[in-house]
Image: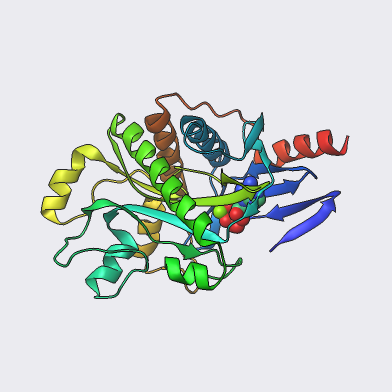
Length: 301
Ligand SMILES: Nc1ncnc2c1ncn2[C@@H]1O[C@H](COP(=O)(O)OP(=O)(O)O)[C@@H](O)[C@H]1O
Ligand SMILES: [Mg+2]
């Protein structure tokens, strides 16, 4: 994991966030970095603020269901969080048979965690949301699908804890779907990360943001499903799709991305924030480097 200690405190540089170890807690500073297919692609001005504010919004909206890691907001893109012992599993919840799960199903392969009847169609709603976990691979490697038995035999988590995680993830997902239905959106699928704090189950990382979720516009679903195309989306799939159209799927050299494509992606993030929260997004103007300096100077006093 890429870390540096040159700022006096150890800093973990994730794909999107920098995480400062402040001793008894962590500080997560969300950058404007964007990645797709697990590859870094550049930056989108203001994206970090949008993601951080959106995650805060959702943690608040689900705080009656499960404890979360938020301690306090420190700046537009910085949040102090509880230091958790992370469960090394990405808890993917799916409400629909689409994306990679559809591709696997259509190819006749079993998706670990997924139980579906034969004869399903692309983008079809599952009878009930299901969990298709993956491992949490080290930087530079791809996460691999795993089922409950794999999680238990590899000792990634106890069976009691896993049962609690599944139950909790489904409750949080249901809350997300409910709230978004009022906004004309469908929460299609998402990914949660859980951790333990003094033995308690805590929802960590980020939730229901465009970086970890897929959203569809509800008013396009019926028509799209009938036509066999994917409903209109509100998320970073825009950039993924653009890259796919250039023949890029994560391997080899990243094609040069034009400024208009970045700008369109930025608009999608703003639209996602405003649509989901029903609040206007106003960029503070503080960039990632400036905010990081501010945080470090208060810490290093
Ligand atoms: N409360 C927490 N305690 C410890 N680690 C956390 C917590 N919340 C999130 N993390 C971890 O911090 C990192 C967040 O940065 P991110 O940019 O998402 O990194 P990554 O490239 O690993 O996805 C992730 O590795 C995530 O698992
Ligand atoms: Mg991450």
